[in-house]
Image 1 (cartoon, rainbow, N blue to C red):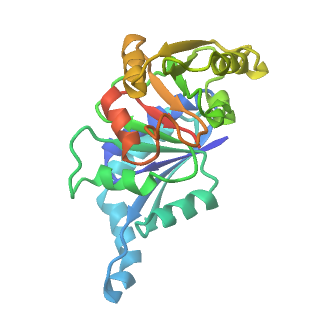
Image 2: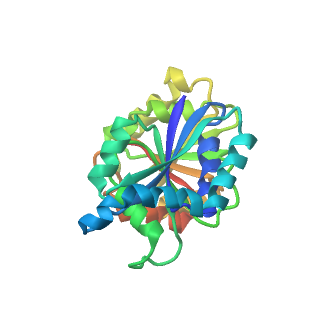
Length: 273
């Protein structure tokens, strides 16, 4: 059983991310935590009123809580529990401590296509979760398809850390419904031994023998452009990057660039540390 954490602003729109989490963990029951992050007020008086404010939240957002009950009834088998948790303190450390204490397996992070603004709540949430030490699935808004059939797992021939096929990825893509392409983007002049090493790691991996997968080698000076082109041409549903040190020149790190990748490709982007 896996634990999924989804940041929420207590709107029905944020509940739409649940279907992506269920698709990623297809066939496995899960616990879902909807985390509502509340900034701590500056005054002592407001601090004393926090417990009452929490009670008000549950009464005012009746439509939100009714929607949660409908989801529970619709996914009785898949969802073991679906709870709203109010976390006081909007700091990355607070978020990380909560994730560690509750053994969270996957975070679903919303990505908005609009330009970042000071009042953009989705952008604030994304920043809070950008450096957590567990897999994050970045999901662009306005995505209609939540079926992950074609998965592109990007490998870097210059970084052996990215070749460590993550157990989490192997578990979530073990279904016969998935087709995984291990995409290797390499520059002209790359040592062929590095490419052979990658191919052998994939094709001789016991855990991959019963999976629908292949290796795609793409020679390209522009790593980013090569990945984007592949995604568009092969109609990829999910982009994945694995364990890494300096992946593609830090193009796919947990900072702002992660959400930018999801915005540009318009497909979910899973990063695994």
